[in-house]
Image (cartoon, rainbow, N blue to C red):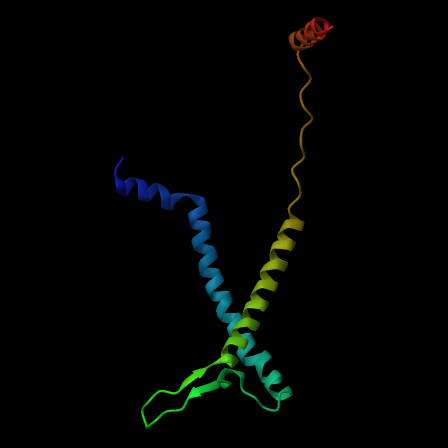
Length: 131
């Protein structure tokens, strides 16, 4: 079997295709959540914190010495915004998984089959030999 055929078999598996679809949907969902946090959640939070724009909140470690030099800063505001996005995504994924698990009904388990006459006879012989 050639490597090309092995790769084709690998890609054709259902789980790989499901994973690809999940990654694509997840990327799109991530953009929606990012927009939700940036455009809807953070403006009221900024208003509550006296107009602080979290995306630009930073702790400057070193100012630019001259024009064109970069400012060295810890951008903690952007980090806070990304953490909020993560919490929202995690909560939505948790609720989705919980809902899907609730919708799945456990498959009914069939009772074990009755032992055959031979099995019953062998069990009786075994029990007699134990005595």
